[in-house]
Image 1 (cartoon, rainbow, N blue to C red):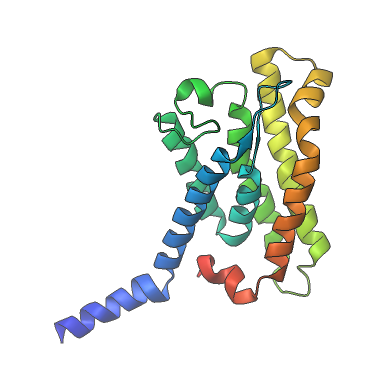
Image 2: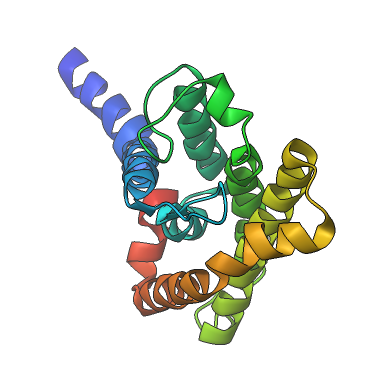
Length: 199
């Protein structure tokens, strides 16, 4: 009887209520964000490299609950701040976090909020059109640019035009592709897949 009761509690609290799914989602997107940092291209004209992280941050915002997305990106930044080599270029530590690219890392968390809030306005499949997903993802990229650009200007004393030239322009073409592919993946996903990590 006690074993049956224990299994019922396990099934209800962990399996049925989705704690396992959410935990797997957090861990999966944490690992993908870290992997995205290793897929990077340094640019000679700017201290900010091209990475694949924003692609995974967009999908993290779309597929996870908002607070789980915050936990994911908070854990990523926390691991890097502790010195683990999870930032671009296999770097870590507070010097990297508070360096020229630190604002973009903070922007990941803001991106989670913006994308999640916009997507949550469209609950059913008919409302959640491809165009609206594109808009939500593009808005997420925009806030990453805003956070990154402001911090880059503060650290480097760049002018507004220099921030645009060195902190935004080199990344627009790549980010357009990331937004497109991320939007296609999310739009083509079945409703069960979209809600798998939110159960």
